[in-house]
Amino acid sequence: MVKHIVMYKLKENSQKAKEELVNVFLSMKGKIPYLKSITSGADFLNSERSYDVVLICEFESAEDMEKYKKHEVHLPVVDYVKKTVQESHSVDYIF
Image (tube, rainbow, N blue to C red; front, side):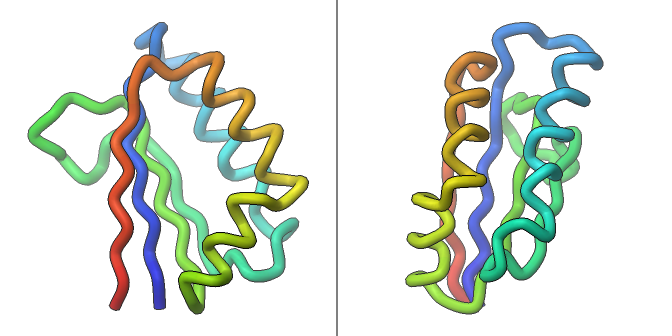
């Protein structure tokens, strides 16, 4: 199982901006067959750095994660993220 965790810092740190980004992430749910589970919300990981939104995606394999990154449903999400995010830090976990 592969877990991909990304923490995002938004340009506009408002509740509305956070909710919009979370909704964009969750819009992928059920549309990408090899995306086993997806969770997104305010920084529920309580990271030392102050991130606004966390995205956690789970896959069966690293190959599935790579396919997800190129999927036609995921690509518009990437474009939205580029417009709204100030910085992000990605961590891949395999277990």
